Length: 121
Length: 284
Image (tube, rainbow over all chains, first blue to last red; front, side):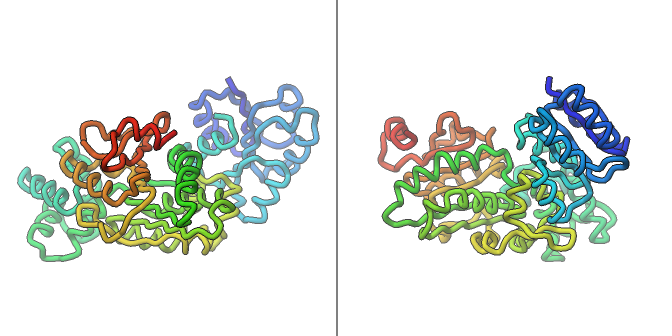
C-alpha cells in the first residue's frame, strides 16, 4: 500500500483528500503545516505528497524546498494543490520540485488523474 | 409526459439524431428536458414535447436534441487512444504517406473540442517527423452550441485540469481571466463544423484516422451499421477507426478489424483483401 501525506491547514480539505485517496488504496498521514510535514517526512518518507501552498508556520513552497534538499527528499512525488492559479506561481512551484499541480477547486477525477500522471496509480 | 408523448419523443430523437432511447431511459429524458422546459417557461415536460410536435418554435427541436446529447469529455480522455495514435497509427501512416506528406484526421463527435485538441497536441510530439506535412484535423458535432465553444478554445480551470498534465497545460494554454485559452497555433489547426452523422458526410473527403468514440453506443444496430459503413467509405484503405474502449464491431459486418492489444482501435480492411492475412500485414 502506498503512503500519501496530505499537507493542508484546512481540516475540510484534508478530510476530502483523505477520502479520495483512501478510495485509491493509499495509506494517509496528515499535517496542518510545512513544519509538521517535514517532521513526518524525517520519520518515514511518503510515496506521495498532496501539498497546499498557503499555510501558517511553514508554507508549501518553503516545505518543498526543504524537502528536496533532505536525504531521500527527492523521492516523493509532490502534487501541489492550491488556490494559487497564476502561471508565475505554478511555474515557481514546478521549478521548486513539484511533479504536478492541482488548482482548487478539484474533484476526485482530477486528483486521481494527477496521481496517475506522476506514476502513483 | 404521457406514453404517447414519450413515444413521439423517442421517434423524433431517432429520426433527427440517431439517438435510441428505450423505456428504461425515461429518467434520463426527465432529467435532461425538465430544466429545458423550465428555461423556456413551459409548465411541464409534456408541454415541451407538444411544442416540438406542433413545430411552433423552430429552435425547440434543436434545443431538445442538444439537451439529450451527452457532451462528457476531457483532454486525453482514456489515454490509450492517444497512445495508440502516437505509437501505432502515426509511425505507420508517416511511413506510408512519405511521398504525399499529407494526413487527415476526423474527430466525428468532438463535443467541446478536447478530443481534436488532444489529437493536435499528440501530433506535436511528432513535429520533427511531420515537418513540412499538410495536416488537417476536421472536428464535427451535431450540436452547434458545443462547436461554438470548441472553436472559441476557452476552457474553465476545471476543464483544463481534467486529463492535462500541468506542463502540457502551461505549454499550450494561456490564462484569460479565470479561464484558460488554447494556443492560437493549436486552435488554427482544427477545423470545426456542425454535422449530423445520420446525413451524408461524403463531402468531408477521405481520412487516414477517424475518431468516433462513445457515440455509436446511443444508436440502434441498423443506424450504427449504416454510419460505420459510410465511415468506412471515408477511411483510407490503410487507415484506422478509433472507438470507445468498450465498443465492439462484432456482427456489424463493417470492414474494420480490431488491432490486438489496443482497445478501441480498428484497422480498415482493404476492399478486395483477404481480411485476416491482410490485416496481419496492416498492423505488423
